[in-house]
Image (cartoon, rainbow, N blue to C red):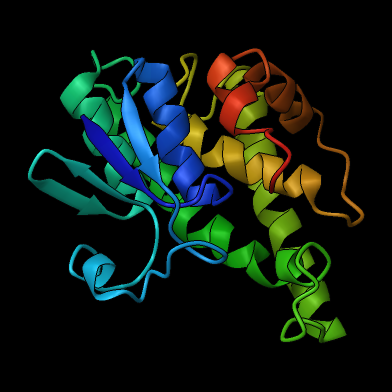
Length: 207
């Protein structure tokens, strides 16, 4: 059986959990990360030398990096609904997965850590403001894309891109700060909330 290593409150672990829900894939999970077993333990570092969650063990196959994991699970156990086989459709999903992992995530890292986690290392007002403005800018990119598709990030159908970006959207709404009006993002958020996997792992009380 698939084993997932990582605490359930982690946004990146929740990508994997939500993907499993969409695929109706059974798994076991072990708590690793802050507050639980340390990812600096030698047994964990042997699986992921970066000391970060999530990690999966699928038989003797070990994989880390959340977006790589969900791609693997969809390709291995799905029917191309979440991760299209057609090269251009797949590339579109990959484009948005990579955008979430790089541009979008990088923009909100400081602004989220300041009010949501009360991190002492993230209290510089100018840096918070710059991060919020960058975050709003990338959310504006998402607003435009969702207004064009009228449905999901990569087009008419729900895909892996919506799992990664849907969790980031949850974090945006959950972070206590002023936000510009984005009706397409709000409609998307409501649309995702109709999915059982999102209700379980997307809006589960943690950001």
